[in-house]
Length: 349
Image (cartoon, rainbow, N blue to C red):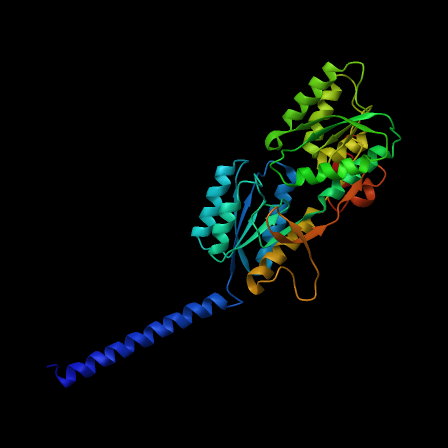
């Protein structure tokens, strides 16, 4: 038989233990819901080799920090296995949001599902991750990017001519959208597509090989234009043209408004590029990521957003409009907004 004193002591100890657990639980809950506590965001980039991704990174990080977030940036260097391990690392570190510039848009659905089961918000940045049901997709209107390229070629009156398409990899979900927009833009113009190529992992050196081979095989039937998936690819296509003294004679289009592309445009070897104001995209993405973590909503109350199918789910979609840039509107669109005049006109003034 237990003594009354021992029973009382046991009861007191049990009560104190319950109170301590309750306080610890309340403290944990309070910290988790504290709007002033830093939001933890993980960002994994496909690669930082292309000039524009460095701009995206810098603006996203600075904006997120201004909004009270901590950002961990990882670079997958174009390797999908590396990117998968980075996403798993972010899950282990209990990030509250993961922003992904996908290396392979078809290979990350399992990792996205795992992150979402852990209560982590996942954002498809610039490229839509397929069949994953991410919490948000933010990008530019990629079909419009392709249409602007086609519009530029059609405007030069090249009816009856043919163009080459040198695209990025189909593992990038934006590539089919850009191609679709380009093909739609050519409809009814009388312009045909002679050949379509894809540069694996966005490696621009493949464009040099493709264009060089095509020119060698068709010495009497050069294309009138080359549609390039981005400005790095355009640069290699122009290099191949230069070896045959065709640079400036064959219309070349690109996208991203890289500094070298803008220089080529004012020099006359590249006809146009598509400017995508990445600062606006990165800033908006940072704002929406913080918004998602704090409220669970993709945009602020009263704001509208669209939706897009990732092949299995309907995903909230915020899109920004791209802008066509040629020598005629270079000063208006690019100078002072994206590049400095001294840089763009370096070789012509």
